[in-house]
Image (cartoon, rainbow over all chains, first blue to last red; front, side):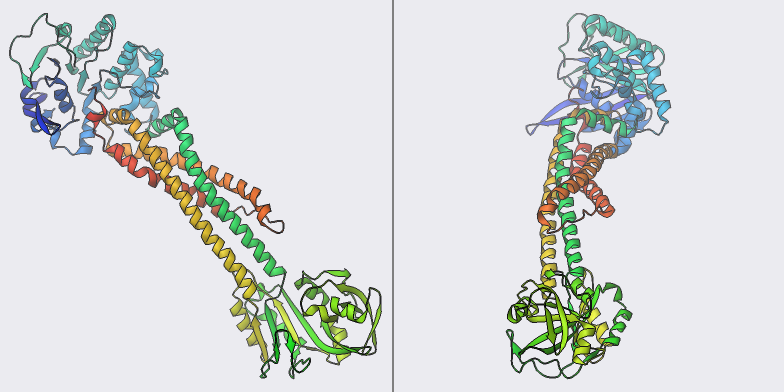
Length: 234
Length: 385
């Protein structure tokens, strides 16, 4: 069984009372340690796929399992536990809590864990060091650059040592040089065995992925991925 | 890093909102504290007055005859009745179960005496107890000190032409006028007051008293029980409670207390609504943040705990400050309401109650906002995802 298994996944939203199919029928299997890129035009369903994979949104039909756990067979609170133990989220707009320092933001997934405070601080400092930000640990997000905030977000996703990292357009709001640094960081993590699923519209990132899935109108597009045509941002 | 770190940092960051929350609840708690402490202090003052400024139980000899007096007009002259009370029996009053509630026992002997050609009512009293009970008596000169001294009621002094230092012959015994009562508007104005022993000697009624006034009322005194107890130890006497005035005062204070509680309840309700609206606003403002928490694996119960923790800290602060502000306000207002200097009552129960009230109101008012926060859809909260 693959590390991630998605079978006959469908998601239909109601928009002004009219059903809109975001995902029509997706089947996908991802092996442990894979760096998977999910690409597609705006409205292709890639963010919906990531949301469902992250246990944040119930599918209309189909199953999603990670490491053999059927996500949507879990209750709401157990699903929260799953997110805490199995997933690391990296959001496009960083989503750091503005009144917490970089280190405190990194410690957020540990806040509800019964671990000694010193151990939590140590773990947070280690991952901040890993992303090259240990000296900025006491700074608030507003005192950090975009690249630094992204690194804090990555550190936060790593602090729990989750088996799976889900990243949504992590380089979308960064300049080219910083985006390249962040992608290099993801690649390093993947080289260490970390499974990563990244949604992106940037074709240049393709070179970092082991595998790329192209979504079109809620379906996996089997056609070859274009080399030069830029995809519209979500 | 625990939930409390997040709660503390959030409150520290949103100082304005926190101050508004504290103020909303503080006003409610302070109002409750002010009204309760003021009522309590005024009740204490009233009780103090009741204990020290008047009799409320009257002991008279048992009499089967119907009264022949109405509206201050007596038909048939002065009568002290056929039966009398023995002074030595009064010691039994101190043996009743509620003797601790008795502030003073003031025996009296009444009798008519001749002054020149006039007949005047003489009242023999225990000077120390009588002047203690009747604090409203104001004397020109000084009260009685010996058996040869006399204090005249204002009307009696005018009628008999008495002035301070005069010597008066009562049934051929000389007394010096040491004091003249200011007008009281009561029967006391017509009296000549001498010591009990002098009156007993003059009327040849050693060891006998006509009536006894007992001061025994305090807020929680069971006056009716005391009356029954005295009746039991003093058979052959009629013991009655003079309760109308006292009851009216207690009733007025009770009404004030009920009114205070009503006002306090309304203010607390408004405080609760302020907390509710502010917390709902805060939760809606933090939609994205709550979405992050949920995405990172916070359970719904963690989100509820986080919001309630913030609310309880704010409530705790409001409770403490509300108590202090309330006591301060009472201290400022009380002198304008009390007739005499009234001591401010610092009650640990009121302090604890205020903090508890703030905690209960604050957390109850925040419960729905906390529940609302926990039920937020994380995907709605994180639209960027």
